[in-house]
Image 1 (cartoon, rainbow, N blue to C red):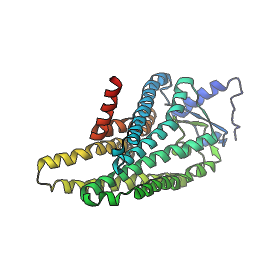
Image 2 (tube, rainbow, N blue to C red):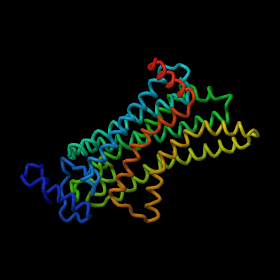
Image 3 (cartoon, rainbow, N blue to C red):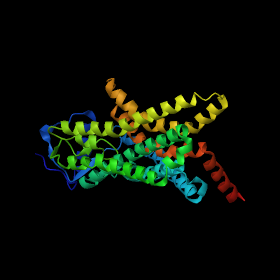
Image 4 (tube, rainbow, N blue to C red):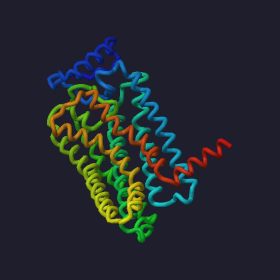
Length: 340
């Protein structure tokens, strides 16, 4: 076994660069495996290291817009008593998760792009491995809850406030948290048991569970099965019931005789459908590409993976805030007061 180089060797920088090149070309193997390292190196976007500075600009802008947009949504919902309804409270939950998601991903990415801060301790890697997908799974669960909210509003309007009472919303939020914790707690535990690795370089801009498994030596079949189970039990489950809910909603809408009433009913669901499409489309595209045997360039795959965590949190408040009448009016009122 080769000992892990802690960076004190005078030629460490050269070694790291050569390791990155070997990993990018796919010529690493377990013949020269290393023991579980204390430190990993995040590659950022392999093959496009010279463009990291350019990538940092949209990443930073996305981060700022996400913080401002979601913080605005939370402030408006908190101040406006008329918005203390199930739909808006679920939107507030979504904003909290979005803020949490970008807060645990973007700052470290910017550190890689701006300061070449690629080192991450093994324990910090395990922490990222748990929290980043946890927030993603929570967001998926909240989108399912929002679909259920629209389902009840359309099919059981007279019982809406009874079915979605505050205590029910609290239980839904706790269920979302509990599922994320239960499903993703095994990830760092399983990763901690990996004893040897092909390299200490992770070809991602954050610590992804499957990225760590891919560079591990030995039998990793149970890790792959676990990863697939997580996807099916969270994203697959949520997406199935979201599609089912909106299928039933559309059936009910198209039974309305008035075209004007149909259009109004569909417009209330339009913003949610846009958020759902934006959130799930990268996942669906990635899975379909693998099923159809389309192999993307590593850099393109990593950029697509980053879109999972960056674009929806930025766009969600813009879409939801612009489409919901009460939210839009409140924002315009605040802007008008500041202008005066």
